[in-house]
Structure formats: C-alpha cells, structure tokens
Image: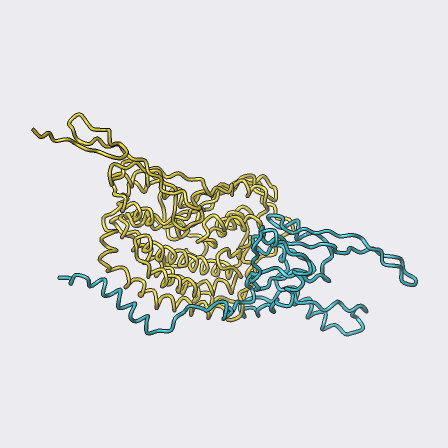
Length: 188
Length: 388
C-alpha cells in the first residue's frame, strides 16, 4: 500500500537536494552574460566598407534600413579622369522593426555589416530605437572575431581563393594591394 | 401562522420557478482575451450551469498576423524569417518545412552533413519546446517549482543553439540547400555535453511531479480525448499519441535523416491530461537519445559541405508540393504553389495547434471550471500557432 503523501515527499527530496547545490541564477546587471560570437545582439556598421549599393535595404524582410547618399566627384589625378563615388549620408536601422534575421549582413557584398552580441540598448521611447551610422559604427568595437569552423567542414571558397593568390609570386600579383578586411566567412 | 418564503437576492433573484425553487440561468463566462502573446491563454467563451460547463467555444484570431499573405511577397530566404515565428517554441521545425518544400520543388540534393545537423537541431528544438510545457503546465495547476527546473534545462540547450545559430528562439539557421554556416569548432562536443546534462537532470523534474498526489488528482481521468476525436478533429502530435493513436511522421513518412534512425513512438492509451503530460516527458527523453544518435553519426561522417551554393535569384519551378513535418506540437505542413517566380504564389500553412484546440468544443462540456484550466493547459498550444 502506498503511504499517503509519499509523492509529495519525493518532490520535496528533490527540493532538498537542490538546496545543497549552488544556484544557477546569473546576477545579470552585476555579472554580464558570456555570449557566443554568433549571438545576434545588434547590427554594427563599418562605414568605410559601405558603397551604398542598397542591397541590405532591399533584402530586409520588413524594410527597416534607411539609406540616403549623394554622389561626389573625385578630381582627376594627373593623366586620369575624374571619378564619381557614392557618399553615405544616412544609414539608419530601426531596431523597433528589425526582426534580427541577419539577412542584411548575409547579403552585404562588401562586409560592411556585422553582428555584435551587444544587447544593452533599450530605450523608453520606441522612436529612440532608430540608430544612425554613428551609433552603428560605435558598435563595431564590440564585434567579436568569427569562431573557427568545425574540422569536418570544407574550407570556404573565399579562403581557397585568397590562399591561391598568396601562393603566386609577388610580381605576378596585381600592383594594387587589396584592402585588408575581415575574412568573409559566410559570403554566398 | 408562519409561511415559508423564499428570499433571493442578486442577479436572477426574481426568477423563482413555478415549484418555488430558485430558477437558475446559465451564465456566459469569457475566459480572456488576454494579451495574445501570454503563454497558454486563449479566449474561450463558456456557458456555465453552476460550476459545470455546458458549452464552450474557443474564439481565435487575436494574434492573426496574416503570415500566409506575407509569405506571398517575400522571397524564400525572407519566408524563413516569418515562418519560424508562428510557433515561437519550435522555430527550427517551422523553418524546416519551408526549406524541405522548396528543395523538393527544385529537386535539390542537400549535403549529407546538413541533413544530420538539421535532424540534430530539430530534436534539440523539440526538447526545448517540451521543457517549456513541462514547466508551464504545472504552474497552471498551481505548482510553481517545476518551471525553474525546466528553465534550467532550457537554458543549457539554448546556449548550444545560440552558439551555433546566434539566436535563442528564432534560429534562422536553415537555408534552402542546407544550413546558414558551418558549425563552430568544438560545438559538437559542447552540444553533447548539454544533451547529457539535460538527460541527467531531467529526472529532477519527473520526481518533483509525477508521483505528486495533487498533480495526479488534478489530471487523471480529466479531459479524456478519444481516438475518434483525434481522427475527427485532425489532432496530431503528443496529444494524439496520448490517446493511443500510433502516428508519428518521423517514423511513418521519414524526412531528413529519420529514416536511418529508429524513432520510438511514445504512446499512452488513456487520453487524459496525465497521459498527455507523460507523453511529453517521455518524448523529451526520446529526443535527447535521438540527438545523441545524430551526434554519433555526425562524428562518423566524412568531411563535406554544409550548404549548397544558390543562384543570386532563387526561383522555384512552376508546380506545387506539400511538405509536412512532425513538429513538437504536431503536424506542421506547408502547401507550396509556385508559378516560377521568386516568391511563392501561395504558401498554405497547416499548423498543429489550430487543429488541436478545436476539440475543446467537445472536450470541455461536462467538465468543471477548475478542470477547464487543466484541460486547456494539457492541449499544449502556442497562440501564434493557432492564429498564424
């Protein structure tokens, strides 16, 4: 015959055992959480890399990226002709609309956008959640290096291409050195 | 000399029946509407005769976001963003249906490593989903403690999911043709440790609750779903299996790598709230074992890619297909009709919770108000999954 209340006692035993163990609660504001590098906290912008191609704004599923730009003429160097380039005036992301899917970062062909695990940017007014290029640029400092890939995977094509270029003798290489930028890990 | 008089006050007080007894009127009671994103609430309009429910009608639609219409103006990568949100507790499984449908239409071969990682993550997602309900259902019955144990386990698994995908709930890790990116180095070891930890600690949750006299009294024999109801209403998932229906897509129509795994189908025959809860708990154990099996296979696989290179503009050829998956809460299906555009012409979503809660109209009449909470909670639904 079952003793009445045995089930309750069994539950209390679990409680008693747990009482002797350390608590798993994290003391958040005092102790910051350790977030993995892929954590999708906020989108950071590396303004120098942006060419105003508008791919991010177009591919965004809820169109929360606002970009304005103007054209600027670079005076002709001796023996050359003058060129035009796009200058970014405004790059705003409305984080009240953003769904944190990361498509903008994935489509950016020039590696101007990055995920940062930074998450402490709550505001009291929804309108203050639209952040401009200066604020997005500040977050660049918090972008971690991408994690190394699993040994069972294949090397990305981009890495292969870069290694092949390095193997070539120096004189065969084009004179202009490509700008050193962060390695693209997930392009394509 | 003295005459006995009946005194009645309050609403209906003047309703004294012909036999001098108090005539009662049925009361219409609205349960909800609450804020639609609150866990486990749904608007129910019930008609009460005293404490007993006479009629019940679930009123849905407070969280309708028009997902199916939004799908039609999104390309196949953007659809994944939306598709993983209707049932926010099984985001990975929701993404899976979309990419499976698109891949089938394209006749695309998915790299074998991607298939096994997908299976692994789908099973981890299933455990996450079940843990949520294993924690929240006791709260609905008045037991507050279990949710802390459930969330400790959820946190362990979520850490693994976040490390690989960057998201804690909306993973956005599936892509047509594979997964978004390669696993981080050493992740498989950490995932295995997370799975082991959860398996080791899950008995805590079980011991807290499963023999508890109060819990058993509240759930045993309450809200019995018969197998006729299951077939009549199209109920699926753990709720159907708790009523003895032997149906699990992972075994009966294997997708991903389930064909190479032996999937034990957890079943109960009682069909009551307790059986449903037991099903969920045992399924969590089964999923942990399946996750381990996937990790074993992943370690044995030869090196290979995890995704496929896609064209810049992905167009799905004209035609239609129906892809269904065994989501944690039941069958989740996508009927994809394409006219060769880069957006679907129609993407119909069949979500598990919508069908599962229909049975409330039949299940609640005859039950007491106190049991209503037990029954409602044991149907394990997500409001977003009902309203889409």
